[in-house]
Amino acid sequence: MNFLRTYLRTRSRLKQRVTRQSVILLLLVIGLFMEAYMHNLNLVYIALFFTIALAMAAIPVGVMNLGRLEASFEGCERLFAKSEGNCFIRVVNPGPDTSWAVSLRCGDERFEPVSIEAGHTRRLAFTVRPPERGRHTFGPIVLESLFPLGTIRFELPVSRRFEAIVYPRPKGRPLQEFLARQEAPFGEESDFDGVSSYHGTQSASRIHWPSVAKGEVMVKHFSKEREERHLLFDFQKSGRDDEARLSQLTLWTLECEKRGLPFAIRMPDRLLESRKESIDAILETLATY
Image (cartoon, rainbow, N blue to C red; front, side):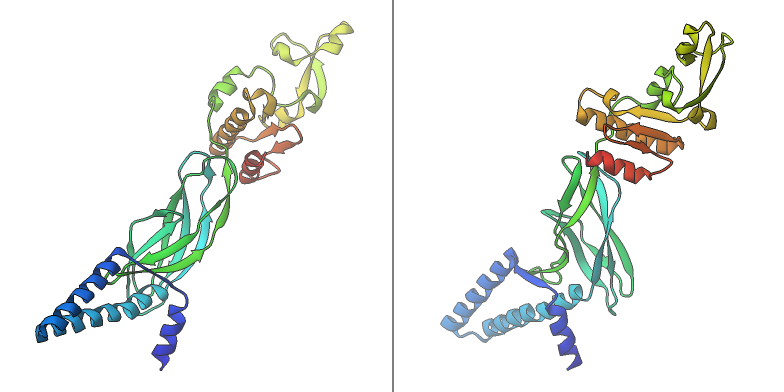
């Protein structure tokens, strides 16, 4: 009785779909039945009953094979437009037996089947390739299995759909090229906190021109630069159009993260600073611009 309740509860979690093998099995049963009816052969009756019994027994086996699993969506790594990225689900098999031939499907794409041992947890990865930046919806995510005979596809829904942020495609000039072309100090003129005498060795871009008009050459000191070399990227100057600018800024953001360099991005409506916001928050702002 307990097994029946468990089976019915497990079966209610699954969807069952016929396959091509189901049609073949049905034709086989009809052929055997016609042969047995016309010729009244005991051997054909035995084959007919055996085929039907095997097909019926496969249903509860398939239900318990997949239905006992517990699966949940774990999220994705960073996704970039027009590039493949990995997403993950966590699958737990709390049952006493191994689950066989379990495959993962996301949307229309299916992935290689795997087995999940009894009492074990497995992390399954699947790939997505978003066409453009922004917020995108993927799915549905389904676990499925043709075990044991392939006559029925058992499906266990994991998530009807999920949303992920897709960052702009990292593309453009490398950061080293940007650094090589920089002659001005890292910071804005509004950031400087004082002037000092010009010794002839400082860059001409540091000259405080109002002091020159008064007859004394002075140079500016930038507060950001004195604290630490701080890169400033300007949205308007980073590409020929918005998409090229976002791709370029994404590339520089990732390179600065890799090299541990603090930086800021002057967007049209705000200033993004790596010291105040996480890299993912900055990338999300670029993705949803």
